[in-house]
Amino acid sequence: MPEPTAHIPATRDEELLCCLGPGFPALAGSDPDRVARIRDEVASGFAALTDVAHAVSIFGSARTPPDHPYYRLARTLATRLGTLSFDIITGGGPGIMEAANRGARDAGVRSIGLGIELPQEQSTNAFVDLSLQFRYFFVRKLMFIRYASAFVVFPGGFGTLDELFEALTLIQTEKIRHFPVVLAGSEHWSGLHRWIRAQLLEPGMVSAGDVELLVLADDPDEIVEIVERSRHRQLETYHPPGS
Image (cartoon, helix red, strand yellow):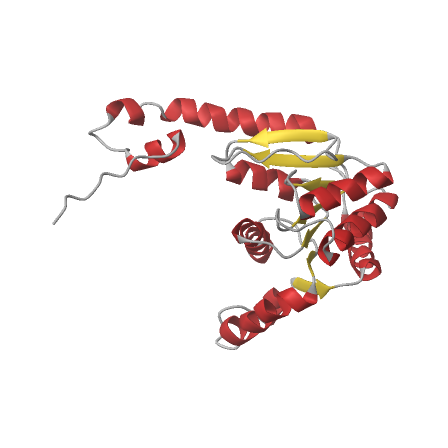
């Protein structure tokens, strides 16, 4: 039987995760530097986005071509939201992200792209006005959530699902304020919605209120109305510090 091949970490972060322990004191001792990088990444993100008052984070597949109906819907929706003074935040890549940034550019509002360092380099699309690059996914997701008045989630892969369920978990556990989470493209998302109801709601693993956090919609007018209605509620319930 051949000897098993040793796993070679592909990145510095993976190397740190694989090799933590007493046998690797040099790597274990690098934790303070890692913490400092995380702190700096959070601080620089906050500084760059500090004047973003109302924005919508739009997610979806990087592989959606420009002639796809979802691409056109994302661009139209972002333009409509932009006319209501919502800035648009995406992951800054191609596909749905490009469509949303393009719509923001059409409307003349800030078109923000929060990129991520990956082994396979993904270039920032040409319609991003403010581009930030992150090393850590969790810091990047913090920025998506901190500055969003709503999430609009188009069909996408694992990354899109990660961002969707992170927001749902934080809202469900009241770690963040309740904002709309809209699933754009009911034909795509209806299967997931049925599965959640059948496999999570019926056995009592989530509540009816948890399921209601998700809104399926196809019409840009409906999505805009949901987002705008939520903004008015947020303004009505906001109390300045010391009031």
